[in-house]
Structure formats: structure tokens, C-alpha cells
Amino acid sequence: MIYKNLNVLDVINEKWLEHTDIEIKDGSILNMGKLSGVYEDFSYENCYMIPGLIDCHTHIFMAGDADTIGSVQSMNTTDYVLLAIKNLERHIKSGVTTIRDVGGINHYDIELKKHIKNGELLSPDLYAAGKIVTMTGGHGYFIGREADGETEVRKAVREQLKAGADLIKVISSGGVLTPGVDVNAYQFNIDELKAATEEAHKAGRKICTHCHSTQGIKNSVLAGIDSIEHATLLDREGAQMMAEAQTYMVPTLSAVDNIVKKGKDGGIPEFALKKGIDVYRKHLNSFRLALEYNIPIAMGTDAGTPLNYHGDSPREILLMVENGMGVLEAIKTSTINGAKLVGIDDKAGSISIGKNADLVIFKTNPEQQPETLLTPLQVIKRGRHIL
Image (cartoon, rainbow, N blue to C red; front, side, top):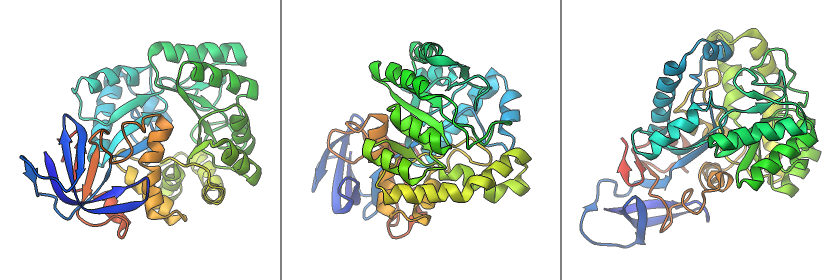
């Protein structure tokens, strides 16, 4: 199939390639330029094509209910699996062709991967973390693997690797959604984080960490963790550390934004709403600090948290733009930057010969009208039309 005469975004060089043809064969991009041959498709002529989006922080077993903990604790296995299948479909129809799930339930995420690879589900590519690893009583303990001390943390990470995890998720600070924990307090100590990082890296896996607290961010950088999710209370010293170590930030602006803007009337528990309001402005300031220090950023939404729905990932791009990032740079965080963080930039994240044909087409130019990102004309996954 040859798609004729499109405007194609080169995310690496941040420029549009006008009047470009794209040839797809066996799910990959075979050729680009001025092409001719059989099976030419002019349906999307003069439209705008970008790489498939990558959401680096999702929770596919959560629905975005106001009371996330209560909802999770009331579900059974069938509920979890059916919900995840629906959420995966919502993601891909929104233009997201790859996701990381960074906090699954009972390794169901790892089991679902088998069905995705077999083509049985309408889904983005899924990179699954299995169970989060957290200290006893730490943030997310109700869905995680509790562990204390260097030795036990090593074992907990090894358990996730044994189960087939693609990456490891640890907890470095308190969180908004766990009652009784302080977002300002760090949780795992540096020796525990270093042990987790060593186990992940020697197995060839990336490691990410949930972290709000200022000290927790610094501990995570010192431990060699690959990405800090949220990084809500970043200060200048921490920003300098992240920039020098090239530690990724996955800001998840959507998470707190939805809690603050929808929470009062949306039924979010009072303890979570209060913590969300307390950190909201600090979170935005941390994001702007990351821009100032040129910290590498990859897009992630925290989809599944309160009133933060799967299928809304493009809104995270709009939030980044609203808070000071250029449109093309925001798209870059959601494509090639995400691919680099996941470790798949050899096959995804940009429109290049030899890479997967994971593509999104829009009627109008998303650089000029960013809201266009919310309404894709067509999503293509490995050469297959989704819409």
C-alpha cells in the first residue's frame, strides 16, 4: 500500500515533509518519498501524518473512577480483564499505539500481552511492569509487592522479572491516592532503590519510580533509575541532577489536573482531593523547571486514576503545551522520546524506513491547531486501519 501526497512529521528534526508518499508492507514502512506503484491510496491526500503516540504511564486495570482504591478492591478477575480490554481499545482508537502499564494487578497485564502479541485484542503494544514494588504500607501497597531492605527488594524485583515483566516500577515517595501517606516524604531508601535498579538493569530492563517528594527525586537519580514518574516537588538541585544524569521525567500532568478541576463535583475522596490541591501548582512549576533545565521528558498520563480516563492521552500533550512546551516538542515527548525511554526507538517513535507502520493521520495540521490531536482521522497499527 502506498499512501499518496501526505504531510509527514519528521519528529527527530521537528519539520514537516510535504507532498510525501509512504509505502507500507508487512506492517513496516518500506519506502518514503515520491513513489508510484500498485495499491495507491489517495484517501488521505494533503492530510497530516505523525508517528503513533506512546503513553509511558497507564493503569489499564483502573477505570478512572473517583474512588480508585474502593473500585479496585471491589473487582474480581473477570472485571479486571474486561476493563483492561476496553481500556486498551480506547487507547489505540485515540492514536496511542504503544503503552507502558506501570502497576498491574496479579500479573494480569503480563498475561494479556500474550493475547495482544497473538493479534487477539485491539490494542496498542503493551509493556508491562507487573506488580509495583513498594515498602510495607507504602504508596500503592494494596496492589503491589511489599518489600523492606535491600535483600527483600532484590527478591521482589526478581519475582517481577520471573513473571515476565518488561520493566520494573518502584515507589520512592508517598502518593495522592493512598490514605495515610505523605507526598512530601520519601519511602524506599537509596540502598533499596540501588538494589532494585541493579536487578532491573542486569536483566536488561528499564526501571521507573513513582515519586512526588523532593528528596525522593534525588534519591532516585542517585540510584540510577531511568525515569521519575510525576516528579511533582522538583527543586533546582534535583533538576540539575536529573539533567546531568539524563534521567527522564514522565510528568503525568493529567493526573493532578483532573483531580483539581473535576474532583470537588466528581466524588473524589476528600483526602485525595486535599493532597491534589496542595501539590497542583508545585507540579506545574516542576514541569516548567524541567523545561528550563532541558530534562528529557516522555509523555505519560497516569490514565486510570480519578477521572483520568483511558483514551484521553492526547490531552496530556495539550497540557504540556499550555504550560510552556512547544507543540512539536510536546509531540516529540509523545513519540520518539517515549520510544527511547521504553527502549524501542529502533522500531517505533518516528516515521522512518524499516520502522513499524504505527501512524496517526489528521485532517488539519496539529502544529497549528493542537486540539486536532483529539480527533484523529485514521489510526494505523502495523499497517492495519483501526478507525
